[in-house]
Length: 161
Image (cartoon, rainbow, N blue to C red; front, side, top):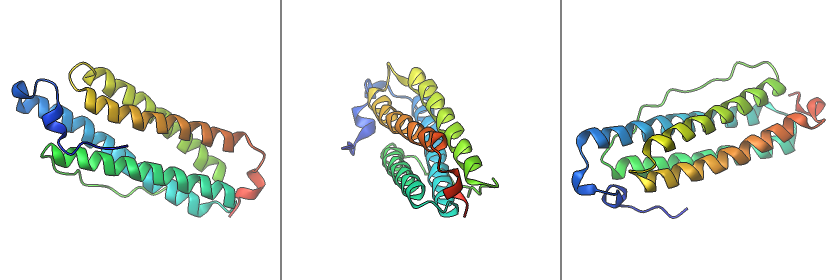
């Protein structure tokens, strides 16, 4: 995805953008940045704890997608003059691969719902930000389908590390 370096200048009605509006945009982007960063950590951890090489490959690819989202959001936040939120490291406490994947599936579903809410709140005023959220949501939907497919497959015995 080609990202425009001057996001704030491209916002509709830039002359009328208030500090409150800027803060609202940054709040959405900061929340997404934190969630996507947590996704990267979770998928990497889960990939390392699963023995099946095919499943590990899928989870590593999903982690790479999530890392790309983080880069997009970082660029957007910085271009708006914001500071990146402080990350808190995430540690998985699940006992087995099936639980890892179920929690990942639930997390991707929550992510899609959160993005829908954010898009609804910003749609008419900030189409460039909505376009970024659309791209992240499309990837989240694809990731959700892949994780669901892994859960539905008969590879449970290969997952034990």
